[in-house]
Image (tube, rainbow, N blue to C red):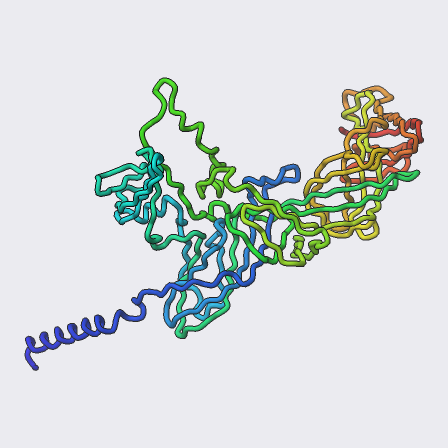
Length: 538
């Protein structure tokens, strides 16, 4: 056709043929709906727990609201069709930080990542069935007869639940009769476990082994040490057994079964707020509202029957749980299975040699140290600093000291935590101290404060005139009187509170933590008079 009209008719025919081809053959590959496939449950798990980076040595581990995190590695299998598909990973941690997730082993890589926002719950079940039919069953408490009838859900779950039945509109649980709702199906997009999904593309289908690695919020761990001190000898040397357990907490609602378990000691420079990034999926409770109870004078009695509210922002609040709904389970790994230390840059990693289960809402204890012949010293410490001299008799502080090396029976990194010390007595072992330890690297001195002594005292005083203006070249005389009521000699560490160049007149002065000190032996049931001079500004 040569005319313009003919060319127009030909173009229209071609467009019509293209439309028919699309209808007959489907949309182009890029517009085709992705097939949804589910990855298998994890065939291998690894959980590496990092402690709360903001928790100091004196802070207790918060079992109800742990603020550490974990790196979780999962190995799964998936069978993919040719083209584009969406892979669903069901059962990831509810505290998952989705932006940190990495999926390896996919032939076509990852196009897009998504995290479901709502879990299967009474409220989401009602909202997903809005306008659809359910079955309501009521039981007459007088006769025990159960009667079922169809109903249509007419309201969402954020207030009173209203159903439409053959008898009209009714509010659930407001008739005073026992009743339940039965749903024929689960609305699309809901899952009883948190779901993470990725979109992928591959020209060929097949079965693949893939790895999902991500950070998750709601974990923490802490060490605790127990020292059993032997009877001291004739000097300050003692031997003690030192044991330690790692206590791990998992506040997520998911268990990690048969997992390789690791913990990392050291302080990380964490600049992201993982709690905010986690954005845990919500499982909303169904709250039914009927007519008010009580009176305007006395108020409603409903509040006194409500369970206590979870801590604001906690995982339990996001799940809509009461604090006592899920008591934390405590499990212990055999003491024979000690966690082994490994280096991780400047950090330290402890690996449990066998696979264990980190239970949902659970606490796990793992032994990582058991040395029965640690060599140490039991000594006393007192300070005689020129700016705090009082002339009063003050008790010395008891110390249990050692060095973290193989020569003294240790030689591995000691992460911070609490410590409990027991000593022998005529009635068996007795508790003598409970304190905390900071992080100690291999080779560092370890000192455990045992409290004030009732047998060793020190009196510190100035023996010369006090000058209003301190002359840097003027030497001031000081004196300390050390008394010991023990039947054996003791070692007293006298801290002088000055630099080495500012002290004279006393032998054996050394420098420790920026201050001069001297260690002196005080005889049994005796005393020792010590004199020295200091100079310079306070």
